[in-house]
Amino acid sequence: MATPKKQSTVDAYRMIMTELERGQVAPIYLLMGEESYYIDKVCDWIQQNLLSEEEKDFNLDIYYGSENSTTAQLIVDSARRYPVMAEKRVIIVRDMQALKNIDAIEQYTDNPVKSTVLVLCYMNNKIDARKKIVTRIAQVGQVLLSESPKYDREIVAFINEYISSPEYNATIDPRAAQVMAAHIGGDMKRLSSELDKLLLSFAPGAPRKINADLIEQKIGISKQYNVFELRDALIMKDALKAHRIAKYYNDNPKAGGLFALLPQTFAFFQNLMLCYYIPKPINDNAIMAQLGLKNPWAAKSYSTAMRNYPARKTIQIISKIREIDARSKGLDNANATPYDLLKELISFILH
Picture (cartoon, one colour):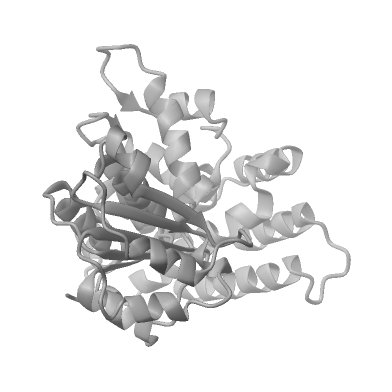
């Protein structure tokens, strides 16, 4: 089997779920990483679907590594038992990272029982991929390294895939998806929960199209005061609108404030700088190709910004954002509040 490092989290998850749904069940699953969403999805599917309710009484054991009574040897002893009036036994180990010694489990991977499905959930961290237990499970079973998306485009892709599944059959306005991605970030559990709120709000049989109005109503992300409205204000050099948005974030701490706005603002001007390396003539299609954009309206934002921000000014803005970020974390900061720093950054960008 391929080692997990050759696959993205999403690709590895899809492969595992496809095989499970086809009845291709591995004897061991090692589910590890910082993002619990995919770990829980695989583990819950196995717990709910591999055994009937009657079979679970004698063939499903769930252990928690954080409990003093749980040891690696106890888990292995349970895994070595044969199923009772069923084809499989399912052993689930949650919080495996809390186990003090996993030598017995490591030895078990050399000769796993074929009628047992051992699910190891190693949360909030990962085992070194060079360790024997990882390489051995990759050979005889499945390893999922569950990581949070690092880029907005990956989060937007998750949003679109989640809501367009046959279960929901919904769509979302591209701008609304980007606003959600920027506001919530890569916390997949929270993101899926917020999407569920939106999807459950539709009347039965009604078209399911998520827009900014619905997001503001159900989640509380303002359609008027958000990171993309600030970005548009900066692109158009609309000082009044930009400072109004800054004040909104100061008056509404739950919106995220400076710490929500900095990464998105930095990413935009960093991409803007890349546009200056496009061979002439520079047009929307060339910008889309350079930045990997899928929507022409996104390219138009960069076209407008290039008219308002020369390359030299763009470099200065990127440097200023780095400075503001450092000061927001306490470096060379003479008691300036996040709101002070945001106003300073906006004024620097616009002038």
